[in-house]
Length: 92
Image (cartoon, rainbow, N blue to C red; front, top):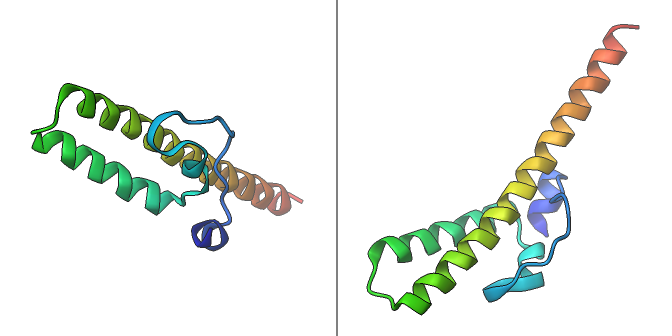
């Protein structure tokens, strides 16, 4: 939650995720989700996992990527709103 307080951005949407994290993924900050995603990618690139484990890792990576995207979308919306407010204040 510290990440939410520092940036003020909130992930957009509230869709549930499936395997390996579920609703817990929704409470991850951007940096936490990004770091977890990097670890999933590292494990997939290293190999040595069964097909079932690889599929579970892939699904987890997809979930984490969605969390990261929601954070980025929220940050973009805040920037756009701030720029629009600045432009409208400057035009008066």
